[in-house]
Amino acid sequence: MRVAGELGAERAALASIRQSADAWRRRARLAHSHAALAGPTTVGDILVHAFPDRIARQDSGNPRRYQLANGRGARLLDDSSLFGEPWLVVIDLRFDERDSLILAAAPFDGGVLQRDFAAAFRTQRTVQWNRDNRAVEVFEEHRFAAITLDRRSVPATPEDAVPALLAAVRELGLQALPWSEAAIGLRQRVEFLRRHAADAALPDFSDARLLETLETWLAPALVGKRRLDALRAEELSNALAAQLDHAQRRLLDAQAPTTIKVPSGLDRPISYAGDAGPVLAVKLQELFGLAESPRVANGRVPITLHLLSPAGRPIQVTQDLHGFWERTYPEVKKELKGRYPKHPWPDDPWSAVATHRAKPRH
Image (cartoon, rainbow, N blue to C red; front, side, top):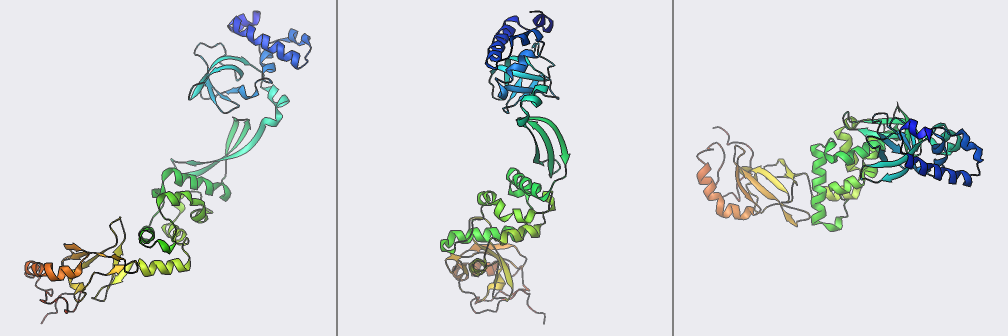
């Protein structure tokens, strides 16, 4: 047992390994004379054939850690006599959630792998997203099974970049994309109409569904790009809008319009943000002559009116314009007429001419 003493190994563990090696030598029909040539790696050179998934390579950054051919990580005991061995075949492990503990192993000559396991070697490209610089990185890796032997950076191709960018969006969330007000508004309008017109058969623009279908709607806009910040807001808006066919766009414009023409003659924007429904913020004087609250979704949903003073300050929030003129307007007129004397405050708002201007000077 001279070798055991030189290596500082446990005699009982080496004896057990030698017995296993003798058994495998007999199964492999190796002449017993090979035992006379035994060296520090002889036992391991034989055992790799019995446990090819337990072949392990030392981590260059952490010499007590090893990567196994089956993909798991493993570590040596602090006082292990195997410290410093570049290749091990692991006989016994205590499985832990992260890196398993190596209880028994034998070193072997790495040259055995090229000779007897040539089919397990391969070269492959690995594409990943670098979150720090928000760019796609591509590496060419030389591997033995799940063990990375060598790794070098190579240029990314369009075919590499798109899947990595989509993976980045899944990791970072949709907020990582350059959403314009128009794109956000389109999503809100579609989701509003899906709630109030189920028969419209509009696509699902919810966060969850958009993340599930990135390959369908976002991938075409990412072709030729290596970074997420290369995607322009206009390109994102176009990619989203492309999910609607011509009939769906006409339906959306008809039943969930972006603007509405008020009695003053101006087009004012409608907001579909939130679950409260569509909102129109407009100065009170621009609605003179309008008896009822306007509606969308083919008349099913009244617009919530945020009635504003001539200075743009909120006066009243209502979905019942008729009731406002009838019950609330007289009090509003009494309170604000003196504050805004240059603006019209008619006694009869039903028949007054709507305007967005102050009264003309005489």
